[in-house]
Image (tube, helix red, strand yellow):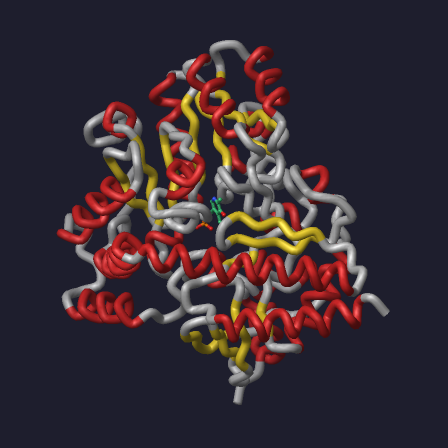
Length: 428
Ligand code: PMP
């Protein structure tokens, strides 16, 4: 039988760092990645057949758990008809209709192949629509790896300690201004200093790439008003929050509307999909109707659309999914909090809906600077101990825990037992 260690050694010889995405390396927790062979429901199995309860969920899309039957059937059916045509298919229309029906304020959708592509295209669209170049993003928010978004970014770039990537031209980075999450004054200051120059403000409505951080009461509403006053578009990057916080994503959950919304993996049900969407007036600036060019050979791929459609259809007609994932995440979050108190472990739990983060921090985390103060050595200990106990967590302090509809009360109980054992070890 192959094992993860051998595969990793082979991988390192032919793939940079042995992984095709840095967040998969277990570098920040001083370990080597597990190679996965299969997954079902809430469980994931490595090549040695060890079973884990999975809280990564492919970094978000597995909201219905792994290998959902309806999605699998839909994909199987599509595969039989061909893998790609480079021509329109019915499923593209159906998924765009479904998204416009489920999400308030969205009239048109353009499918792409990843979250990175969605954001990159949305930024170009905002610049084209407003005829302005500058963008505001927030420190610690991650919006994929396009040049203009690799400025004070979160996720793997934050984990690796290189929030500003090498290789990004200075003049490109110069048009990306950064504000402080949850600090409206920091945004107002940038607007005042760059009058009539800001095309868009992009934000993760719940920050989920520097751990999980909720927006403070009214922060998103104030941001929206500020954008309106300045003729600037507000982009919600809902790669993580879309169809997870609610059917209508963060716009519905917080009652704040954005001008452009970006989506990723969750609308592909595990296939490589992304999308950007918004009002007709804005979206009709995109080619071939308008002058903002964006294209893709595999965009709207029939197999990917089949997976996404099946997932979104379940989410549309099944309020129970949201009730379940939020309830499970609440039991988990409350349970961890009690255990942290019991064993005197300085852990702060942030939770929004089914997104959670255990920050090894002395006080509540509300922004990037505070997130960076957390004890990553303690996180590494926690991660390793949990893995030994059969719980698969993100290998970094700066990522989210994702709860799916396949996580049962038993899974949560077993996870809390593992956390109790881990906190007991950590408090010694
Ligand atoms: N935006 C956000 C909020 C994300 O979390 C991510 C990835 N996790 C991206 C964009 C980029 O998506 P992708 O990895 O599909 O390019």
